[in-house]
Length: 402
Image (cartoon, rainbow, N blue to C red; front, side, top):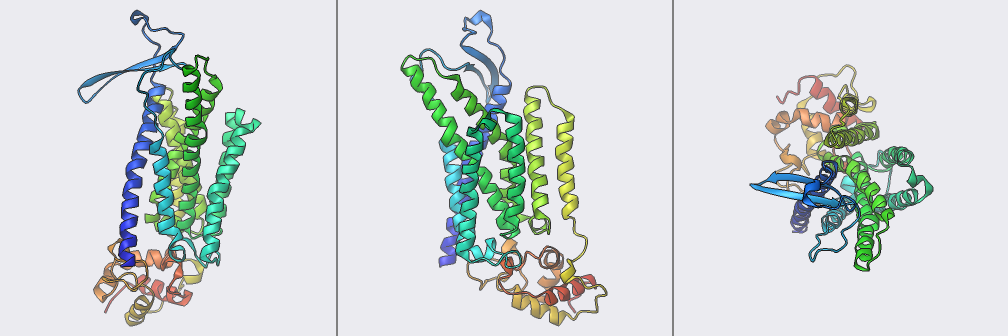
């Protein structure tokens, strides 16, 4: 019953996280697009060019819309002013809740890999929280320091620190746990930008207009800087949210390099789209993003079993021995009714509790247990290098089940 409840909590949290995340990212992308498509207001409509910074006409769903952006604010605020903040807050809240339910409550399965670092669940959770909130403190400090006034220098320093974070996380967590924490750091920075800078700046602007004072343009400048950061963090963060499905990437020995390359690709592709909004797209930026993706794919491409599990001249492995290893190390999860705590169904629907099913899933089993070594997760069932060599030899000799 506990596993059943856990799965439903996970399902509902993930569903909600995706919904509110779509709302946040959609609104963010739309306003970036809108900002980059504004034109000077037409003089024949009487708009004051000193207060209206730009306008846009659009058609959607059978209606024509007219959007205007003020340089700072109108002299009189409307009765109803729509704010965009809860999409960001709920995305972070549900994402953090998912992190707790999936990774912190099952640290031995998804977060800890004894082959990387022998941690207790408490130690792993503590390191994860320190990385997330420590990253926020460092980021805020840099943005509020004199360095924050130089966007290019700040971007370079942040890039170096994020590369260091990618490497450091893979030195303490399983690949899957490292990737999700990299994404959690980015997501926390993004939500922090909304809560700590963008919304306070908007409140200050509204308060100034209400009190009849001229708004301070510094608030708008700081909010713009953080909004730009958020738009470039978005695609790398989204990748980490789905990365747990792709063991080829997070299970590689140089997973941190793959993570950096894919994150860079996401940021570069987003840069190209923003440039395209302004009709200033540079093909070199898009090509660089594609090259980064290609480099990541080439890096993690399977070549052979890792040294500890490679069988140079594989003997004719007996299927009976292979089946015994799978029964002892894998079937507790990959069965119609898993016995491993925390599992109510076989991961990805892969069943290994019959000879026919073992043969059918030989490619996936070899990739997960030999090439990437991500299975069993956290090596919960204690699969040995000798057993991995046996599986490798059986696979490379034809994966016969008779």
